[in-house]
Image 1: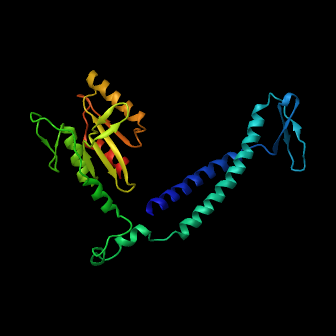
Image 2 (image 1 turned 90 degrees about the vertical axis):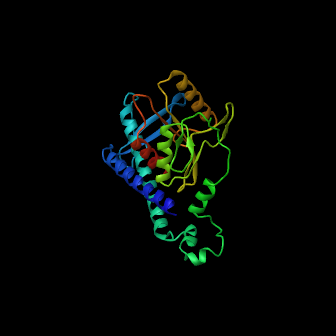
Image 3 (image 1 turned 120 degrees about the vertical axis):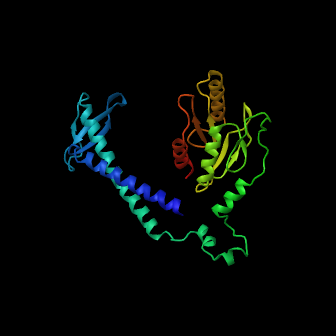
Length: 265
């Protein structure tokens, strides 16, 4: 429910801003109305109706495109303002009547001694996140001679940057799977560094960190992989998170925190 009311409140704020802009521009519009009729050769002819009682209007020469545009824009802005006001009223009524407690919150508001007695019809966010994170899978094997890089959760990863990302995800309470297999059409099975979960939106995303982008061969493979993601309708900013670094521009904790806050909170 919080997500819905937040979205509606943001919509009202946007509509108010748009209304103010439209009113501001409307105040600068010329008086009167635009009439359009078909002339010879089915070409549009434009007339300026300066008064409401003037049904025909004065012909606007073809070289006066600015007046035509301003009059047409005036009509659009008047219609837009009316539509904005109708929508604002509808949303404000909805927000005023929206229940303070949603169906999802009923179970969470029960005492613990009652919650433990039954399984709710609606899975809570905590239940969903726990089930998602505990799903069993077979990741990509790491060779025995690889450096022993262990996260705070006790799993071995392939780079120091992955250690930092994993530990930050754990600290921020973001469920993740390390190198969870994903099948990409036209490419094969890939193992994104992290498959992560936005709990609030219950949205699964893939996070790939490209750590050697100053290496031409590595960078070429990285680009090929990103193209394959796109061909499979997995796009950056939607279901795909991309971070990268070079020897001179290493990944830092602030970058990781910003990415988590933007995509996963």
